[in-house]
Length: 366
Image (cartoon, rainbow, N blue to C red; front, side, top):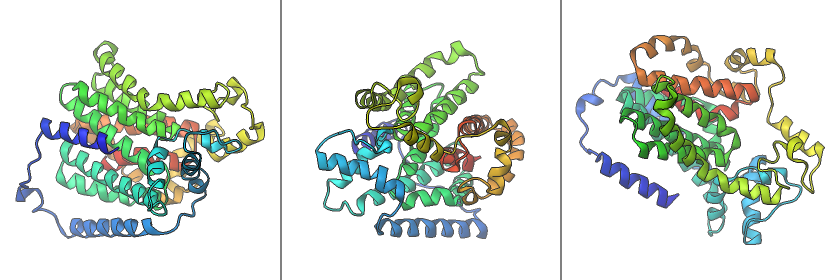
């Protein structure tokens, strides 16, 4: 993480050096509402940082996000954990937690790292909005994102959500920058690697990788020949972080690269049962019928879905104004393509709002 961050910063700094001077006119028109919102944002960040030092009690964290890395540390390597079906999920973020557990500060460092990822997500949202839209948009996008209590709560436990939010937010930002620089291959590769990191942390992030691909295609007006090279670089780059986890599952899960998914196709590995698979699939809240899918926007707006009450309706109420915004700004159109495709694919396979978190940074910018 550190080496990749330093390399990305060095390349970005060389490509476009940072200017420390900030013209007064950029912030001179901030009113009391903006200043109050900024103060509220700072308060949210402060309390998020404080709670990083509290004991971990979240079930998924104890069984999966930290439980599995802790077992790796105890066994001095990657080992199959029979009976723990969650241990077979992609765990790119688990590598970072493993490094934390190897230190003497293992009792709080994983949560602190997760909170840091949440902070970096806010910085990525503000940076993307400020670069491609305006400074005011940057402030309001950050504030609106923090108004999603479901997103804020992801910083309260050492899980995968804060990492997937960060990876998807920066991947969308890199794709936008690539498209604004006449198809810069370097940024397409960077976008692909970050999308791959999100998918390697949570397999459901595949829908956001597809969303970015369709965003790229929309820029080229869906002319396959014009965007084939860019899509190829994106897909190949995205596959790099994912392939090690696919290979691990092939070795440990009886040849099933996606276990616990697709068990009906590849068969059941030793140590697992159909009842365990059924229980796991129910935890993902799969979409049950076409009618329930049609009702998804209404249920999401009213908070009828599991944890859906933690998603405020403000931004969803403002969505009807998008067509007027899209006509005026092509970049807004690209971001809206990503959000719409992400919602369409997510809602088709699941009704759990927590899986929609990686799309919220783009939604906040809109």
